[in-house]
Image 1 (tube, helix red, strand yellow):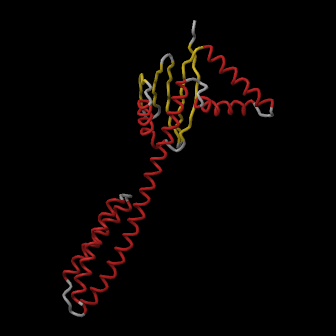
Image 2 (cartoon, rainbow, N blue to C red):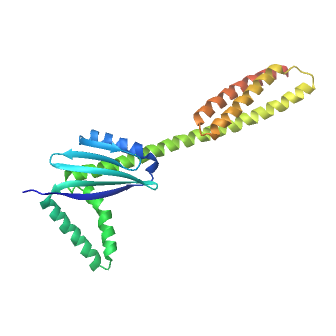
Image 3 (cartoon, helix red, strand yellow):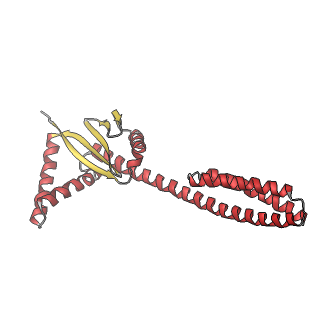
Length: 239
């Protein structure tokens, strides 16, 4: 007779709590890509569950947001014979830690942290290894995408900031020139209209910038810059 028991593995996806939904969806896609059969899935703000199967093995994966992280744990149903071997190995690690001077608490912590690496290595069986690698790879891939997006946003922010500084400087310079020409009795209405419109675009762009809408801010600043090009051209004709 074969008795089915559970083995539990835990992984902390650090810094991904705010991307909890995205991680859940990415993990589902990862299992699909890997050809792992998904039996069921459920999701709510506190906990998500995924049940997968491969041949006679079944794994139940739980996702729980905790602070800034996501705690991902899973149980793999195995035969009693395999479980007995795992218990023996865990026991040896436990007593080895105590004999070398560690406490029972340290030994317990060690085995908990080490369990996921045990699954990754393939020693816990095919499904445990597949699930563990999917969990870890999904977290690392999501972090990479987030870092890339943050990097692109930072580049856009810097571009918008540089454009804003240039446009503001040009507006101030043109406004000074217009004041001088007005005092001299020159007709500067065409130039003034373009400078005024450029200022409006600049102010709108700053609202977008402060709202972190850098793409919109850049578009408005570029439009303002083109207006200023035309204003400077018209100004040269007046001189």
